[in-house]
Amino acid sequence: MKKDVVIIVLLVLIMLFKLLDIVADFQLDIPAWHIAQEGVLVLLTVIATVYLSHDLMRRSRQVKILAQRLAKADKQIDNMTSQMRSARQEYSQAVSSQFATWGFTKSEQQVAFLLLKGLSFKEIAEVRQTKEKTVRQQASSIYSKADVDGRHTFCAWFMEDFIQEHNQDVATKAPANEAA
Image (cartoon, rainbow, N blue to C red; front, side, top):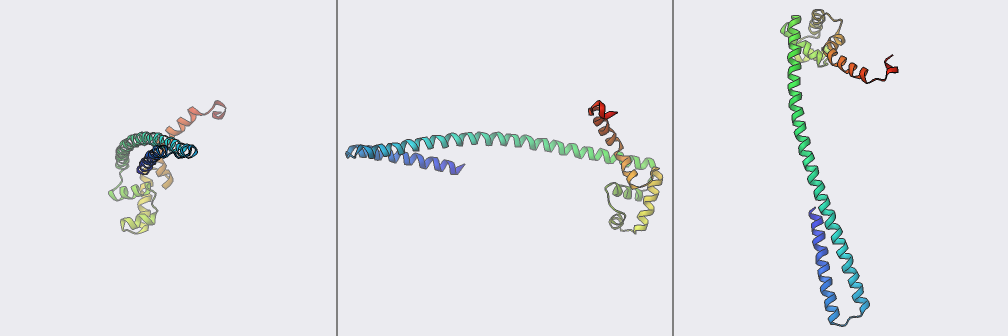
């Protein structure tokens, strides 16, 4: 924007100097065609100055509006981030509560959380600094206590409510002929 202001100031200065030149030309009896030529240049400079000034003001208003929208979006993101943190904590507490209900040991709870995060047995063993065989045994114990047949069913158990809610939303929005 500073560049635009500089250009407008320069155009105004050119216009003023040209006007002074036209006044001087009148006093010196310069031919009319030369004065007309300089008059056209002054007119074009006026038009360019008005156009650029108008465009600069329009863009300034747009920038202010965008800045306000950006500030509003930032606030919404901050709110969503805190809501997501809160939801993550609630979900984590619900998962921990379910682990306690199933009677998982502390080690099994750690492995179960890492399974839910999608880590492989090898990765879990590295993170926990244990052998992969130990992690596999703990996973088998986890699946048995949770009464599921494997990792996918175990993970799906925690997603089922979310998926059912989504499926109900999809089912209520589906046309009648697709539901049949």
